Length: 303
Image (cartoon, rainbow, N blue to C red; front, top):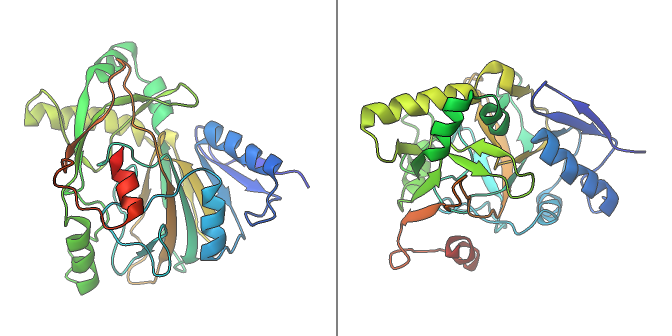
């Protein structure tokens, strides 16, 4: 049966059916998935029920898997990030790991334990947001650069005293990362321009703190406008893939104390380049102060 591709929203997202993301996935079907990902930015798959080894094997078809720079990988894995709501809730808008220069190009998330209500994830199309800007705002955005840092931690529940959340916060920020990115990057495969923003943004370079906040708000509201988003109601066994170079996302924190567990892999990305040809630049840690935990970390940080 051929893969069925059904758009979920007007500007982003498609649900794919008639395919299993296991070891029997053909090269032709994988190519169809790759092409759909570039077009729709986020792909949704129901009823996959992958185990860790299948998840990692499927991820490797997109490129080299990379662990999180600061948070340890799941037990018996070098690349899977275990996300348990008791410790972490990604409940603000972000693009994954933009505090490093070569942040992941693709993220692959699977639903393991899903609450009976709530816990949806919403994605936004950062390429469409840029394309819809009036020309004067495009010119402005093209000229700006922003510093991103992991000390602006998106993934810890607010107003919580739980030990698990405290441990996660300590681990997440144990080593400070800062990277300067262009506000607008050129996608290496599609040539589209997209906005790099999200919760890891610390400030816009070359302007006052007040002006920086105003500029971030101006462009971020364009990204997260409802017309530019898609919302997914998770079921156990779901797999979602997104182009991390052209999206932001947020997990809705509306499920109280219910259990919610998802597991994620990420694929090594390139260093973004701006409209002016300037690349992103890592600021912290410097090569002399880096403290990678594994060989995979060393590879990830070397770029």
